[in-house]
Length: 180
Image 1: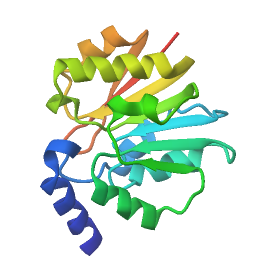
Image 2 (image 1 turned 90 degrees about the vertical axis):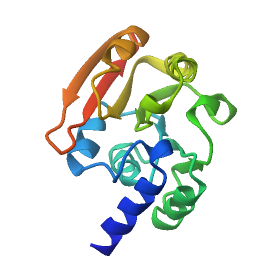
Image 3 (image 1 turned 180 degrees about the vertical axis):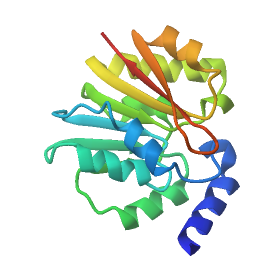
Image 4 (image 1 turned 90 degrees about the horizontal axis):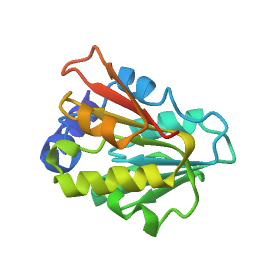
């Protein structure tokens, strides 16, 4: 319990950058990773947090693939460096808007838990546009949010978008998007 309480305190302390009061549930971890490319080489995660979705991505991706995980909170980056020892993981202490500074290859799949609710329209549009540009054709972009209000924006930004409601509390909405 001590670990879960400490984790919740970290998320609450950094609410504006995490957009959450605790780590995502196991249900969210599984659902958000359901559309990952099975034979991909390059994966990207935005909003690594303390690494629970990161672990799920690593478990599902091929042994010769690379995962670039972006996190703006330096403390979270340090904790994940200590807890996940996997040479396929590249931890980047920077925001998603700077992806092109770190990733030069086309991306097979992207997973995000960024708090778009707290982002400006310009920042949101820039991140979604750059993500779509970097994603391979037929690639997937999956996002967890705790509101349905972004569905219209995500539907407009992507060629296809489906929203799945989770049963946990508070209810999460996973946007599974793709590029044709």
